[in-house]
Length: 320
Image (cartoon, rainbow, N blue to C red):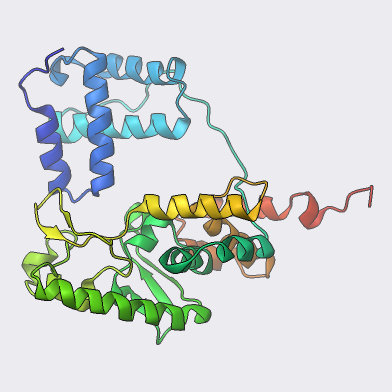
């Protein structure tokens, strides 16, 4: 089926970049917009409206059986399409069949299990995972750390471009000072080689490169965990060293969990769940934990109190 030549995706991509959406969000939104148009045989979106959006969302829930979060992501992409690209306001009272939301208690490792999994990791992957657990970082927050965000003096990390775009400070474990400093020394030596070869300019967010022309080749703006290979930025076409790929750490953590013989599904985010639970277990105030995690709503942080109240943590079995 041939796509009509009205350039909806091109316009959407241009507006996403003008509004400084992340590359991951851009790819996701464009995918959902394309799937929506394909579902309606690539008719012009101006000829479609709320009934067609409801039909598409219902199809996702009934036939594709997507999760509630996936359906919500699709809805966000279509709301962006009509509000920002088509210029049409939509009624938010959709009558589509909604995917069932599952309220799952997060998987949490004990302190011994955390140490066991970390022990099966090596090199940069081990250091990254230690930051996920020791600082409560999300995976992409860790990978997007820049040298200037690491504050050894005040023992803290500045988390930029987090989920929800609410920057925050979190703790930097004292036990990682030496390993992190040694790692940065190695990264600095590689940065000098890139600089001499003309590839030392890192991609900066928003329009910072225009505002500070020397910043891209500055050490403080380099990624703490750079990629091992140079790559071409999909937006600017610039050849540079981006941050490490998330898949590398994800695979390493999954492999380490299997080697540790844990009967739990362990992912990178499990370290963040364990960070929050262990802080609450140690008696820290839930508001403090909320700030460190960067949760906008306290209800999101409250999930970890349910983890604490599970069987072995608080209730003594009558068998014992």
